[in-house]
Image (cartoon, rainbow, N blue to C red; front, side, top):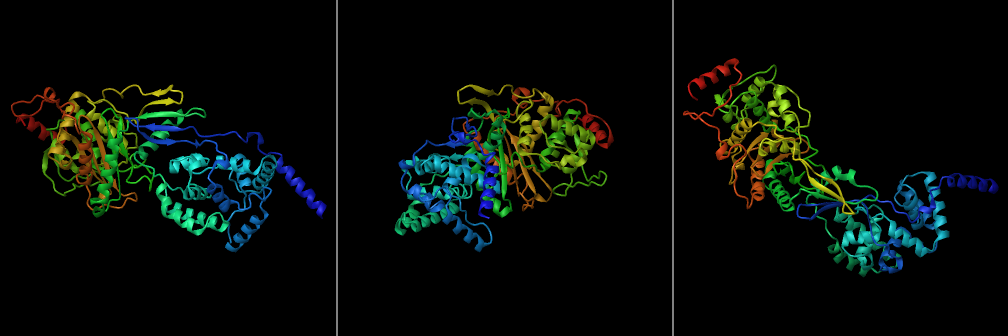
Length: 615
């Protein structure tokens, strides 16, 4: 039987040895190229990719680090031959008592073999190959060399490989200067680098570090007094990472990842204004933590861009550390009445004028029966007044007159890429869009009618200084006529001066539109000046209703605060199309000259009478 067992083991070893990885790759390193994003003033926003520290011998490290690693991972490292039979037996007993795997029996040598050559796959083949390569490593190298390789190649979270890179990332010191607490923290990361990352979860990291210190006491490396002293002062040495601009950074990273190569690190020049970004994030949190609590709103998003589409600030939520979902880019929500700008632009391009009248009265389109927010109706009113007061029934009448398909075409021309349903309800913003695309569409009004593509970076350079990408061009050219731009910007400015957007008014000409969806699930304010365009959204991720939050309340208030900061030091300028030399000519009755509009239905008869009577 012994002979047959030996033969079986030999066959098993030979079978799994056949496709062992190339052991000549021991010293080779593979890493993801680094991507560094910098703001307009050169400040680093974020860095992605793998970071390797300086190679360091185990004898150059403070004794506390290898002691912490051995106390936690492999107490018999210097006495076993690559496989710790005692440790394996102990782990088996613990796992049997627990009924599931709670403790591993792998040695440092086995972990090195896995890290260098294998995958985390749990299978018999991988375990046998791991053992074979561990035996080879023990035969080929000394214990000190194996420990050195392990500490220089182990992954410790946040893209860091090796204890030196981790020491610099988490504590701002080289590995040779680690203290007791820091050594224990790094040793604790070996089990689960993401879960115990001190820059993501300080509480979990501290608990794990305390356990490692307890292990060191049991191992005889330190006494209890030393462990207690380390816990009292150690946490203050952990560097905390700023999450400022991280929603923006993640958005840009996905766009520039294609420019990074195996041997080419890149630096990306972004459009982000870090000063404005900090203001946006701080004001968003202040609003949500203050009035937002009473109003039942838990999330928000903000986008600020210059009229050409360059994103100057972007907040995809209130706390990046808690949720990385980018509500400004990835989130699709109904825009409500903020979509009416496209309805009115389609009407103006079809021949309507801001002083033409539309009936503000109940209407039924098939089974669809829209109502005004106030449930009040004013009868015949001008388009300018209808937009300022956000009349829902007037907007539905208007889209029925100009045609839903024409409104969809206008929205698409201005940059809306989300799917839009061509029906009467589209006038009230029932098709979902993202905040960034809606803000870019409004930027067309601030960009003198020129089409806008939202963008967040202007140049990409590699580690050799060569330009890999440089943005060229400014957009799609003129897509709104001068007449339509003048009409629209005058109507949208009326929303701020005379309508529901008064809370957004600042010390210069501005225009915009509020938006509120059914049951107060979403609240928007989209607005612009001659220098900046901004979009604000408030709501809850699960779609629950807020407590009567409309676009003219919290969103408009936050928009005003952000825009005051953005415009600080800038002289007031008229809106495009509304400068002194651009005002439309008027007759003696004060009605702006305009092209004729289509004449059908009772509305057109009323409009004809208005024209005959001089307004």
